Image (cartoon, rainbow, N blue to C red; front, side, top):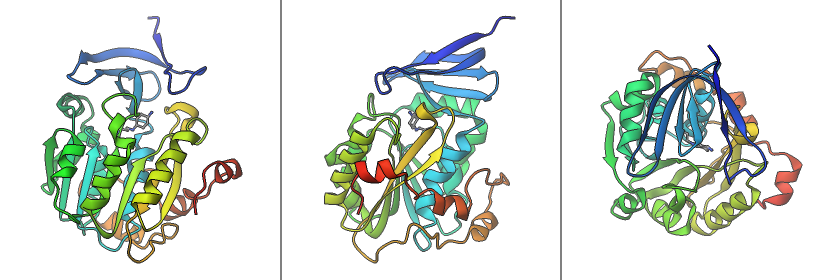
Amino acid sequence: KASKRVYFNNPMWPGEAHSLVVEEVLFKAKSEYQEVLVFESLTYGKVLVLDGIVQLTEKDECSYQEMIVHLPLCSIPSPKTVLVVGGGDGGVLREIARHSSVEQIDICEIDKMVIDVSKKFFPELAIGFEDPRVHLYVGDAVEFLRNAPEGKYDAIIVDSSDPVGPAQELVEKPFFDTAARALRPGGVLCNMAESMWLHTHLIQDMISICRETFKGSVHYAWTSVPTYPSGVIGFLICSTEGPPVDFLNPINPIEKLEGALKHKRELRFYNSEMHSAAFALPSFLKREVNLL
Ligand SMILES: NCCCN[C@H]1CC[C@H](N)CC1
């Protein structure tokens, strides 16, 4: 049976395209915000695609979901209240659930279809919604944060898609202002921050905004995700004023994290060496983006 190959090209990465062989299309529909596609690939398990952009595959989602959560949460002492912006597939919730200090997990996802599709096709990620600490809000995160009490959250994790669709507003200043107001002093924000190979201008813009908005520290970290454009994805990690956060040396020992396992799934990517290594940056990036 001849398999079909799908190409993922996009104006966000001109002149290049990643491709995957499709075994079977499992779901395809338009939500209020974007086209949602799920297919079984030949070598990466099931794949979730939004508006023609790969969001996650079963094979390599562990890298992104574990790092975007444990880089911030292992950097502050016993986080209690966490907000997830986006993250409708549930993978980030699954990872936050490993932290036994966490008492409340709010999640604000704009597209209900992403949640429903994940529950149907990606149970290993949607298991995150089953944690009793999770409170789901379906709606616009800027609106949600405007109404959030000042200083409510220890950590905010922005698990967004690319800023070319519903996630456009999540890289603009008003969003960062509302996020900073909703964080407690010494709280931490961790944003998806694109690729060092493809988006240094966008990364620089986000760093400039964060440096104005967050009086603490601003760091860029990154990880390997083979099915994302250029094979890497970055994170912008900022802390509000208060004692400087030593992001490079995780203070929540990994053993404690393992101990809190609710759903028996072991960590597949994150560990304390990968934590420290994530903040090591190539020379061209240190030159192109001025991190303190
Ligand atoms: N929770 C799934 C990951 C969503 N993050 C984005 C997917 C699309 C990529 N180009 C950038 C990261």
